[in-house]
Image (cartoon, rainbow, N blue to C red):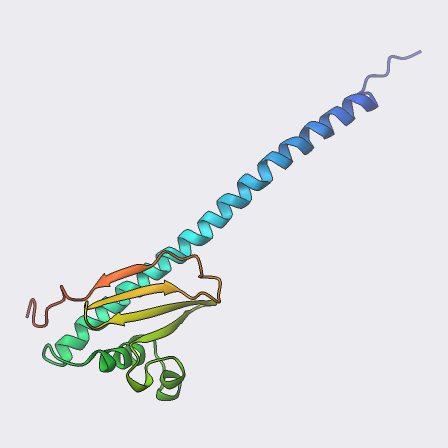
Length: 150
């Protein structure tokens, strides 16, 4: 008889069991890394929206020689930087003296709240969307001075 070389059924099952255990351990770790990356990307997007708000406020002050109301700033910010028309503005929170607006970035929603007393803008994740767990980003608009550098 010839010597037939190969693996027994028990050896093959042992390898399969070991691979299954490794997969069970690695899957939650990989999924956690993916979730962390998604949250980090949404946090960075909130920071970009906050930077856009600060830029909008700076341009608003330059345009109005350092004055203007928070309500007008909200409307100016949305119309200029988030490219919404008047009907969309009314349905997104800038109408009738509101100082907050919902901004859509792709499929994600962010809320920008302007505090006229503290001169800050806070970018928050929308509680009813995939950005609910976004870390709030606060922009100090009081440090923006009209005419700086001019």
